[in-house]
Length: 167
Image 1: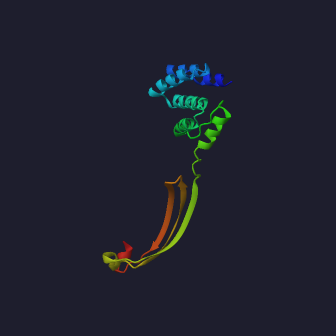
Image 2: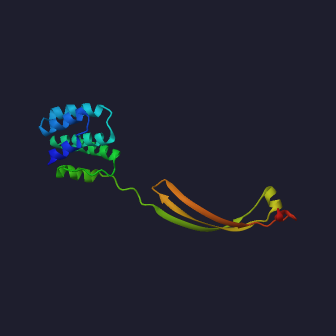
Image 3: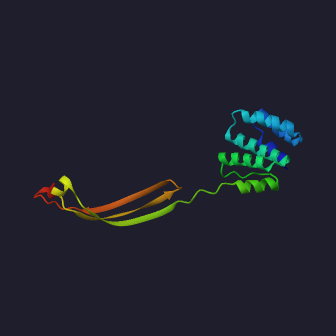
């Protein structure tokens, strides 16, 4: 079963990655390590990188090297945080579950209302009165850095120079 899944995923893979998978299936782990190192040194697509890192994690588990398997799993999640492995051993599945990054935060809506009292100074104070106003707004917080928001405000200023309020 594992061999069939591994072979299916590697049909279009580069030659060193195919050789690494064949060596792994033949239980020749030294050959698999050498071919995998060669494959990782090449420029692989993201999908082939995931296949290579999954094979690297399987090899690490064959050597009972859990820290190395964790590094390979972290490299997979750096490429695809939502990756779900198929056909891995229960021990490797537990490592995938332990290393899985938390989901991104859901969008968080927010709203606000505020009253304002603006005191004008300088040339503006000579032409306009101080003003009262209100601001209303709301939006959505996206992730932990970005927000989309809209604001509506009304502020009442009266002209203090004759005729200035009719401009």
